[in-house]
View 1 (cartoon, rainbow, N blue to C red):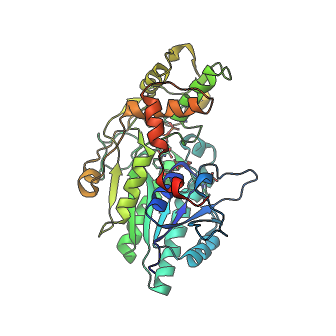
View 2 (view 1 turned 90 degrees about the vertical axis):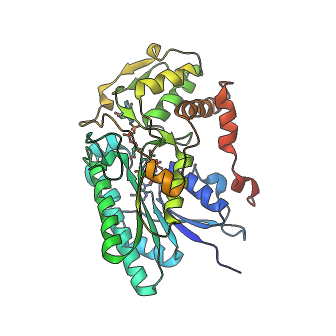
View 3 (view 1 turned 60 degrees about the horizontal axis):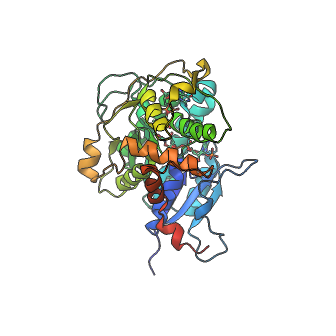
Amino acid sequence: MTQPKRALITGITGQDGSYLSELLLEKDYEVHGIVRRTSTFNTDRIDHIYVDPHNQAARLFLHYGDLTDGVTLRRILEEVRPKEIYNLGAQSHVRVSFDCPEYTVDAVGMGTLRLLEAIRDYRNRTGIDVRFYQAGSSEMFGKVQEVPQKETTPFYPRSPYACAKVYAHWQTVNYRESYEIFGCNGILFNHESPRRGETFVTRKITRAIARILSGQQKKLYLGNLDAKRDWGYAKDYVQAMWLMLQQDEPDDYVVATGETHSIREFLDIAFNCVGKNWQDYVEFDPRYLRPAEVELLIGDPTKVKQKLNWQPSLSFEQLVALMVEADLRSFGKSSNGEGAELFEKHNENSYERSAAH
Ligand code: NDP
Ligand code: GDR
């Protein structure tokens, strides 16, 4: 019998980690994830695909670890012997990175270096090659130098988070060039879904709509509504991560839709889904402003489309409708619009249906 392909994911409990796990399980991988020990459960997003490891059918395994703990990362690498590593773990909130810069940079920047060093030693000792994906971000482009932003656009990071991602990006390039490690940087623009963390602006809005309609919230407090983002659908973006590691040569790719919209436009479409006017609910709170803002992000996905044959599957309007619908459903409601159809499709998950639990 041939061995299943084995992948290791840092950040498996996050939005992307959960969709990537589903994708890899569908492709018959054995999936290992690093989870942090927390006093309350943090595995909500992957509980539906978790099978008790005593069950012969189990193909998803979790290991306690942290990107700030290099010894444990090395031990997990030795134990798991993965063919592919996806480094998605991060303190990923830009605003919070201004409050906790040292920790953010340690986890995001040094964490990546720790993993790369572990891979280098592992490869030298065993002769086994490991493919490495680094979760880079459009935040690295920061202050506008060129639009649309592409692989060759210079970085100008504007937060501790973005500075750390730039460091991780260049270390990945450096290890590729110095030690021939198969390392790829995905420079992903914002991507969202019903599993998006509740404190990112898109989910904060769609969740607030459901809570307002259910009488659990009266106002929605937001910061800068003028910033523009290139928002895509997270399920599409994890496909791109996987595709990067299946190529003959490692490379770096921008993953984006090529469209940009302001927070105001997001609000317009989202509140429209439920026939409400956002101006009646949204209030300004300076707490949500950042010391330095990234005003405009719009990506050029030409390379990822041409070389990886990647395409986004949802329009911006569809993404918003899907997220509104998902939050309404958790309160037993529905928009009864296109969102309802998109929600059913979003939930189709062949691995989940066939899993032995
Ligand atoms: P999330 O914030 O949803 O998930 C982050 C994950 O990292 C969680 O599993 C979290 O664990 C884990 N984590 C946090 N700190 C550590 C640490 N010190 N050691 C190990 N794991 C840690 O992020 P997304 O899924 O949205 O994003 C995935 C990656 O892609 C991140 O690196 C992010 O910076 C990057 N990215 C995201 C984009 C987006 O639009 N979503 C765009 C571009 C890049 P826990 O659940 O315990 O908190
Ligand atoms: P971002 O996402 O910073 O782009 O980082 P976020 O949703 O936090 O902010 C987007 C824009 O909305 C403005 N904004 C607010 N943001 C939040 N979170 N809360 C508010 O109340 C609010 N009001 C206005 C922000 O100022 C900003 O301009 C995300 C993360 O997933 C990163 O990890 C990832 O690297 C980038 O996307 C690409």
